[in-house]
Length: 461
Image (cartoon, rainbow, N blue to C red):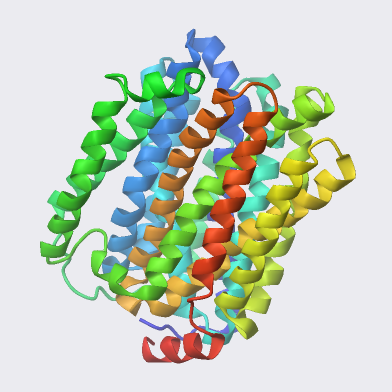
C-alpha cells in the first residue's frame, strides 16, 4: 500500500488532512462556550445539555474503528470524503435545528464522521511518507490539537454574539472546501479485497461505548459514591465490564474484525494502548486547572481559563518539533523524557498552586509531556508495528482508548475533587495524575529503540 508521490503532492495532502483534523478538533473546542447558549435556547438542564458532548464522544468511538477499517479496504480517499460529508451534514442539522432532538442527531452524525477523519489522516502518512519523514508529518498533524484547543473557545466566544448556530455553520464552507480539495489531490487506491463487514462486532462495540458513556455521564460528582452505586450508573458499568470479554471473543472469531484485537499481541502496541489510557486520565485532571486557579489565586472565570494557555500553547509548539526529532531518536527516548516532565509539572502545580510564574512553567512542562503520550510518538509506534492493510485500524485504536480514558478520567478526577473540600481535592487529583504519568514512564522503558523501530518499519513496508 506504500504509494510513491512527489514531495509537493505529499505536502499538499498533509495540508488537506491538517485542515480536516483542525475542523474536527476545533468543533470539540467550540462546544464548551456554546453549551450555555443552547441550554438557554432549549430550556435544558445541565445534565440534558451534557448529552450534546456525550453523544459526540460515543459515536466518535464507534466511527473511528468502522471508518478506519473501511479506509484500509476501500481506500483513504473515498472514506475520508465520506467522513467529511457526514461531519458537514451533522453541522447543517445542528445549525438549522429547531429542537434539541435535531441537535442530538446532528452530533451523532458529526461524531461518527469525525471519528474517521483522524485515523485516516494518520494512516495516510504511513502510506505516502518515507520512513525518515513520518515523525515530522505526524508531529505537524498533532500540532493541530493544541492550536484548536486554544482557538476553539476563542472562535466560539467570537461567534456566540451572532447566534449559537454560527458556531456550527462555520463548519459547512470548510467541509465543502475539504471535499473539493480531497477529490482533486488524494490519489485513488485499488480495493485490496471485498470487506466482510463485522456487523456483530460493530453492535458489540456500540453497546460498550453506550454503556460506558451513559454510566459515567450519570455520575454525580458531588455524591460520587452514592451515585456510583445508583440504578442509573452501576448496572450500566457492570454491563460494560461483562461485555468486554464477550466483545474480545467475538472479534477473535470474526474473519475481518472491526477492531484488530490480534494487534494487542504485539508488545509495542499494548504499551501504546496503556500510554493512551494514561493520557486520558492525566488530561482529565488538567481540565480542572482553571477551577484550581480560582481557589488558589482568586482569579475570575475568564482569567482562570487563560491559565490553560501555557499547557495548550506548549502542546501546539512542541508537537511539530518533537515530530521532527522523532525521526532521529524514536519513540522511546521522547516518551520517557516527556512523561517525566509531565509528572514534574503536575507535582509542581499540586505543591505550589498559588505561584503564578511557577504555575506557567509547570503548565509548559505539562503541555510538552502530554504531546509525548498522545501525539506523534504513540501514532508512530502504531504505524511502525501495523501492516499496511491495518494502518487505519491501528490508528483508530489510539482514538478509541483516548476517548475512553478521558471519560473514565473525568469521572474519577471529578469524584476525587468533589470528595474533599476546598483546594485539597484538586491537589490530590494532580498527584494521582502524576502517579499515572510515572506509570506511563515505566512502560516507555520497555519500548523498542530507534534502530529497532526502523528495522520493523522496513519489514512492514
